[in-house]
Length: 383
Image 1: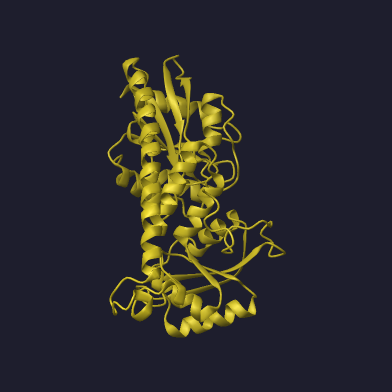
Image 2: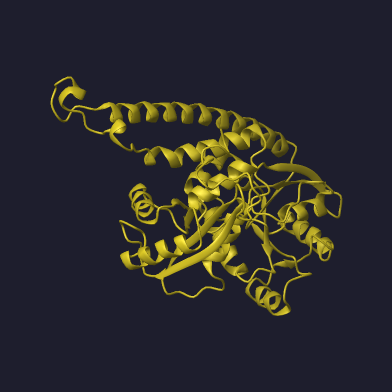
């Protein structure tokens, strides 16, 4: 069931994230390879943690080119992290990268705190925001794909190797009760994943039939895409007169919404609002949501919404285009909409307009530039 797989781990909480009763207190950790970006990458990880109801009480970053295979950080930094965890009374550590099962186990042994990685955190957020049966199935599929290679046993009751009396006097090398339980659990997860894939595929077939009808009727399609919280849903409401949920939160939209609207000359087209992306979006989510992302792949035009008020807006554009490449939409016609110009610093907006001269400045909040965007969409669909 989505939303329950990390309950009790310190990630999902029943509190309001203030560190009080029921709230998790977390320390963030990351690596820096020497390249200076526009923003600290742990800023985004902190926003993700807060979205999941976690209070961030500390950070630790180590400059190094690649993770330590055993503990992610170097041994000295692990000791420093342990002191930080103790001093800040943190019960959770979140790594800005994907950890191996061995790294998680070794860090937890050294820190005395629960350790999760960026992928687990994002999956947990998706589980909280899934509303439709399709969204829940896709999230659960991604969760299981993440869990399957990480199944391990702990303690004598899950001994991996049988022997002596526990193996019926068959000697060492015979599968013990722990390995048998792990195999049973793996088979259960694989069966559940197969069932979920069938469910997702059936939904994908229904959506493809809908797209086929639109193509037969010669109704062009425009798919909104972009970094999470760039304002896609708010912009869709402006363009199509819809009332799609708008929240100042990461991953507020998981389920695709398709609405019919029209160009300034009256020609109809469809607008689809899709899930937002982030830096290093977990591949499990890309795979699980591939049928949903087909709305982008099959669109006649990709309307790429950019948060012009973000200091790392150009990095966000690069991240989104990376996901588009991964799902097969790299060569699709693309129109950039520089959203939130009402709050974007003039210097940042000027730099974005120089970098992307064909982009359309717009504010979904005030309506500024919306008519220019409508006209630009119509011109691109004509092309």
